[in-house]
Image (tube, rainbow, N blue to C red):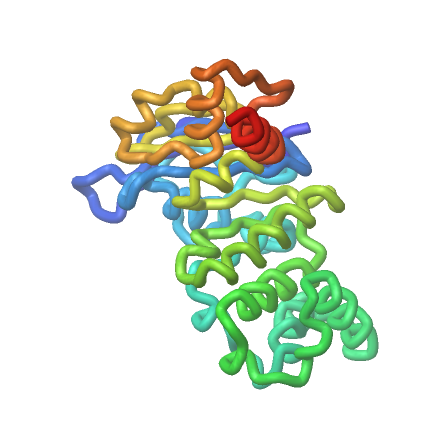
Length: 275
């Protein structure tokens, strides 16, 4: 079932230069979609349009059966949450618990019900032991975990990650990617990730490749990565696993499942043993 439908979407920050040009796509409920593209391709603008932070020029956006417009904007935001790339810009509470509670207060959740909900989602993102800590004293990965917990606590249907790992160190990226994978596997949450990370593409169900405000390629990771020349022309690097798998295939190794890291590692071990 499609939870998001975008048709002939157009947007411009001014009256002369189109930023989003006649974009159409759909997102299945419970799926994990990555949107990739170089800087200025329009991918982060799409994220803000989906959450109603920007107003479209023309076309339509439908979320959960509701047209995204002025009349439905607050109902839409009861279904969709967004996590930005800089977690410091999202904190408003003095403690982690206060920050997770902020969205619940906006939803007018009774105060006596909040502690249980806060603890539930703090545990889900492995931040339960930090509830009394100041958000500013956390690591980058921990801050993003708190931001994600605040979105999850509002019981939303769609979470949009707008370059949520781009400002993190390698360990922070690993932590957040692992959390997103876990959410995808264990819930019916619909995840849309705006990303530069082509390795993340491999873990998603569907991929949109954007360039100059248009969707240039879409499909499963395997389908998208088969357009190797076009991706390179769009200044997008191929995932390391994909490139290694291709090299191994050229020397005689075959894989039961494409783009599977474990299979690539096993093949490398076999190759080393034959030496």
